[in-house]
Every structure is written in structure tokens, then in C-alpha cells.
Image 1: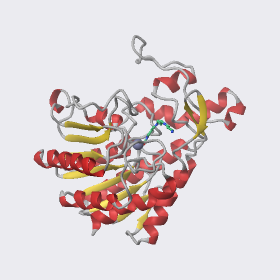
Image 2 (image 1 turned 90 degrees about the vertical axis):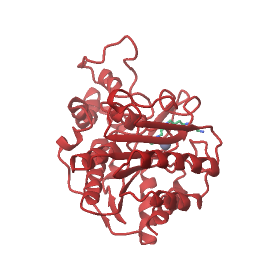
Image 3 (image 1 turned 45 degrees about the vertical axis):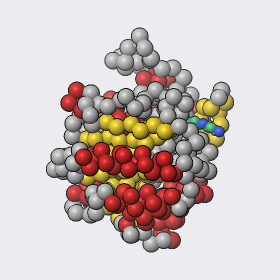
Image 4 (image 1 turned 120 degrees about the horizontal axis):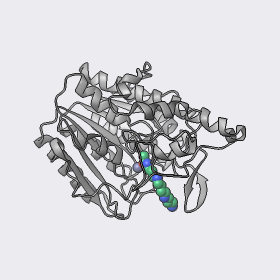
Length: 345
Ligand code: SP5
Ligand code: ZN
């Protein structure tokens, strides 16, 4: 399996996120991707390559130009507020929720931080833009490899992507790598592309991006948002809108769910994707469904990830895997490569 590795991922290295009124060390750390790369290499999954910088126009197929402009200069603006800010990550403090305007673009940098985000857990650091841009370029390259006839490829990048929307960051995500890949597949000539999100957390960004579209099907198996992040999206009654009605499938499961029930939910999602006649599959591959994950609540075991890979292979579609969450750092490499090896065998 081809592996597209973001060799600039460590430039995004958040120090703290807000949790219960305190700044706590970030869960989404560079070591996550390093463990996955180490496991890819030691098990000989396939050749590891980088990717050429994709032009911003490719990202603008998914993200708003003014959002990309903001991200590209956010760190410089943060430091310009006060030179001592260079020692701290940038986090938002204000958000324009109901009754505020979201069409304005305040000159104030903190005001724009809130305009373009939805939580206080996703710090912007000196290298966030560089890392995110290179990761999205890997997603573009991975999608193009499928267009050229590869059966499967793996985009090994962080920061993750599935919580990032058309014009917002959150959930440790800045550019929606999976959505960008799906769009590259569409623009490369495929008519019907499915995104299957198996991260513990609902992929609210991806869902929102494609919610009114009939050409990209979004299916997600995740912790029930009644109790689990991101709380405000991911319910079973969200089925798409307008032309996209029927092209969105959410399968929320209660905290504590084990592999048998989880596996049946993924089978249901794959069944819907097959019935919809998808031509290619993008898998948002989160490993935070693992029993040992520090911020999630399912109870999957290491070997279960081999079965997941086998089940995905049985769907018989060209498949692009995109790395998302998974915070049991020492195990995330084995679990990720179990899926990929299960698929490739
Ligand atoms: C890509 C991805 O998996 N993003 C997840 C973002 C979750 N952010 C909220 C984390 C809530 C932390 N709860 C900590 C419980 C510690 N015992
Ligand atoms: Zn997650």
C-alpha cells in the first residue's frame, strides 16, 4: 500500500488545550504519527513518500478563501499582538453564536479566532499552517494515486481533519484532509464518492461540507453526541438536505460499546454505501475507538483492527485511508497498521 507521509507534521505541536477550566497538555501530539510511521516501516506496509505542495485552489474547492487566508497568517498575527505570545499557543476566547453576525470580518485577531473556530481545544502554533497544508497536500496526492489506478493508499498525517468545516477549525483539525481527498476524486472524474468515518468522534466538519450534495455520501459510526464530543451534530436523524437528502448516515453508539456491536454498525454503513453505488471510498481512520484511548469510550482491542481492515476490503472499492484521531499514543501505530494490513492482505 502506498503511504503518503506528512514529513512536516511535527511543525504543529500544540502545548495546551482547554479542559474543564484548565489548560491541560494536548492529546494530539507529534509522537502519534511517529508511532504510526515506525509501525508502517517495521511491518513493510509499502513505500513511504511525501507529496508536492498542492496549490491553494485545490483546498478552495472545500475551504473558504478567507478562512485559508486567516489560517495562513494566524500565528504571525498572534505574535504581533504581543511578542511574548510566541511562548504560548493561540486559543480563541470569543465565539459568534446565535444572534451574532458571521458575515463580518473584524479587524481584531481574537475576534477572528472565534469566528473561524468552535472550541478551545485546538491551539494554533507557529507551524500549524505549514503542517496542515502539507498534510492536505498528502491527501491530494493519495487521492490522485487512486485515480491513477491504485487499489488503496494511506495518508499518514496530522493534525487530523474531519472536524474542520468549510470555514472553521476545531477538534484538533484545521484542513479537512478527507473532504479534500473526496473532492479530488470527484474532480478527477469519479461521479459518486463515499466517505466512511470510523473515528470515535462524529466527523461534523465532513458532514457539514457535503450535507447538501448528492455526489458524496457521508457515513459515520461514532460515540452518541448526546454525551460525546462534538455534541451538537452526529444524531441519527441527520440524513442530508436538499439534493443531498438521503446521502448522510449517522450511526451513533453509546459510550462503552464493544466490537461486536460496533462491527455491525460499520457493516450497516458499508451496506448503505454499496446500495448507493459508490465508486470509491475515503476512510476517515480514527483509532480512538480503542479501549485504551484516554479521551474516548468504546472498547475495541488491538486485533479487532485487523477485522476492520478485512471488512473494509470486502467492500471491494478503491480506498483511501486518512489518519484522524487515536490518542493511546503507544498503541496507535499497531492499531492503525492492523487496519491497513487487514485490508491489504
Ligand atoms: C480528531 C479527533 O479525534 N478529535 C477529537 C477532539 C476531542 N476534543 C475534546 C476532548 C475532550 C477531552 N475529554 C478528556 C477526558 C479526559 N479524561
Ligand atoms: Zn476522534
